[in-house]
Every structure is written in structure tokens, then in C-alpha cells.
Length: 290
Image 1 (cartoon, rainbow, N blue to C red):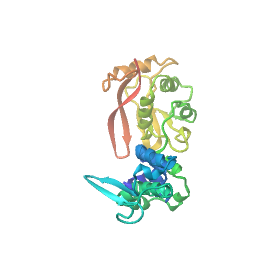
Image 2: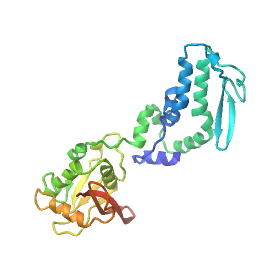
Image 3: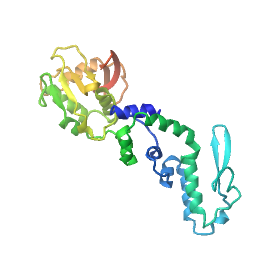
Image 4: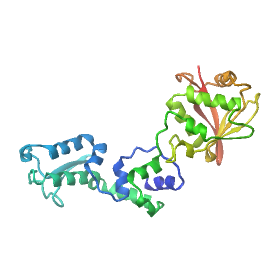
């Protein structure tokens, strides 16, 4: 898995991963904290924070400097004051509770997953640049995973380029962007972005960094369907619309809609997407709507 993530990073491909922030901290050699545990194990983190903030005598809580961890189908108890079971008989007090919490966090986020993480890190290090150590963990996560697609895609329109006879004022182009901004819901916009770019994630530079190309591909009477060259962020769009009314575009798309007839608020049809070594058809939600 580490090699795959590093390869995507090397090729500037954003991955829709849901790794906890602790992973990026560990990759950069940063210490584990209670705040990181709150994301991965919120209930456990809350209990540990309660221990730190307890106003009375912590020893009355009956805790010992030990942690019990489930490993698949077995349960193991670890002492937190040294190797093995050292600390399992030592009570948690007001004086040692900071040590108890910090080592509990370290065990959960590091010790308990050491073998798995070491394998991931070795794979990641094969391709990742040492300069990544200069980044903040949140920046590394953004570079690898990208950001969520914002609801307002006008920045994508503002930086788009047009080829093949299209301009920003072409009726088909105007109709296309009207559909994108006014008719598609968030899920459909993500599918559209994935269709054109190969990913529904936004790169670190934002939508403007994509600089998609909308290229004319066929005239008013063309039977061609929209296609995309994801390697070049290019949408190949037939020039279906004769004037500034998108009714013709909608009608053509509607009659071709068979794949997802029950999709709310919009209709779908087959797109042809070009991949470097082959051409295949995929069904994608698009701009034909009821």
C-alpha cells in the first residue's frame, strides 16, 4: 500500500483515501498526541482526557499503568512503564497520569500497529522524496488525497480553456456550464470531475490548477457522445446546441438515457472515455435532467 500511495504522489494523482491524520504524522516522524487519537479512537481518547482533567484523587479510579489491546482474535495486556508487563500492578495517580496517558496513546497509535506501519513506510520510502520531511502532515495529506470538491465550481469554469472552435460564449459551452452550476447535485459534480480528470478530488492548487479543456467534437447533427481524455483533463463535447437555449442538448441526452433512469433531478447516459491503451464505455451521471 505504501508503494501505491508513493506512486500516486510521484505522478500527482490524488487518491480518495480516508487515512487518519496520525498516519501522516508517523510518516514524517512526528510524535503521537492525544488529539490524533481523538480522530482514530474518539471514545478511548475521551476516557484518557477525563483522566487528565479529573479534579479528585486519580488513584480512586482504580486504574493501573497497563492497556489491553485486541489483536484479531486474541487480547493482550501491555505494561506502560517498560517492556512486557511492567506497570500492570502500578496504580495511576495524579503524579504519573501524564505518563500513563502519553504511553497509552503511543501504544495505540504506534506499538499496536508497528508491523503494519513499518511495511507501509518501507513501501512509501521507495519512491517518496526525502524533501517531504519539510512538510506539515496536513500538507502531505492534501498533496496525496486532495480536497473535497467545493459546491461552487465557477473557478473551474473561469480557468477552463476551449479548443476545436469552441469559445467561452459558444451556445453549447454556455449550456454546459449552466447545467453544471444549476442542475447537477454534489454527487453528479463529483462524477463529472472524475469523468474529465480521472479523479473526483481537487488538487492542492484548487480547481484552477486543473485547467480543464472543453474541445468541440462534432457538429449540431452529430451522433457522437461526450468523451474525455483524462490524461489531459480534456472534455470532448459535441456541439449540440444551436442557440443559447439548452433544450436541444437536454433532449438529446434525455433520449440516450438508459443507464440510471431513477437518478433524482438528472438523467444519465453513456459516455465514452479514452484510456491510454484502450477505449471503454462507462455510465456516468451527466447534464440531462427532468
